Amino acid sequence: MSDLGLIVEGHCEYDSFPSIISKIPNTPYYVPILNAGGIGNIIKNVHEQLLLMIKTHSPRKIVITLDYRDALRENLVQDCIELKNIVSQRCQEFIDSQQNGNLNLPNSIVVVIADKTFETWVCADIISLKDNDNFNADLITEEFENVDIEIPNPNQWLESKLAKDIDIKNRRNRVKIYKGINPNVAKEKSKSFNKFYREITNTNNH
Image (cartoon, rainbow, N blue to C red; front, top):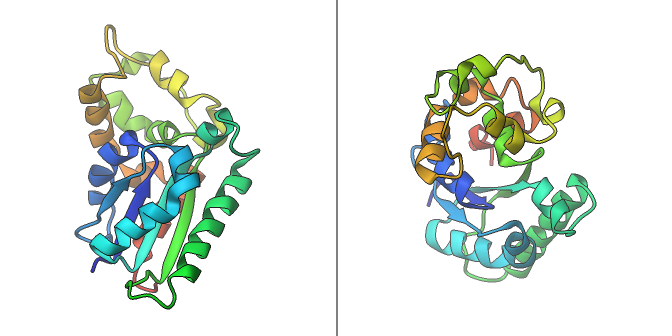
C-alpha cells in the first residue's frame, strides 16, 4: 500500500514527475506513476488505469493529471471544466462499481488539469530555464505572475528560447529540462501547478 499514486497523460509527465516530486517537501517517499498513453485513453479507459493502479499499489489517494489543450484539439471536450467533470464522474462510477468487491479502494481520487499543457508548468520556473544549457538565457527576458494565462502557447514559447541547435523533442534534452525544475518556484507562477502541488502534499487527511 502507498499513500499516493499518479495517473498521467503521457511520457512528458511520466519522465518528469519523479524528479519534480522529489523536490517537494512532505510528499511520500515512493509514488507509483502510471502512463495512460494519451488524453483519449484516459477519458475512455480510466477505469482500466484505476484498476491497474489499485491492484498493483493500493494507494490511499490517486491524482490524475491531464492537459486540457490536448482534449480540445481532439474535440473531446469544450473546456477544462467539462474535461474534469467527465473524468471525475467516470472515476466515481468505477469506485461505485467496486464497493462490494475485494479491492482496497482509495479514499480519494483527484483530477488536476494543466492549463494549458504540461509545458505550461515547465515555463513556470523561469529561473531554472535561464540556468539550463538547453536555453539561451539572453532570450528569456519576461517576468510572469501566472503563466497559465500569460503564455498562450507554452510549447512555442519554450522553443523560441532554446539555445542554438537544441532539439526540444529530443528526450535527453527534455529530461535535462525537467530535472532542473524547482516546484517550489513553479507553484508561485502557475495556479494549475499550485493545485497539483497542494494535492500531492495533502495525503495525510485522505
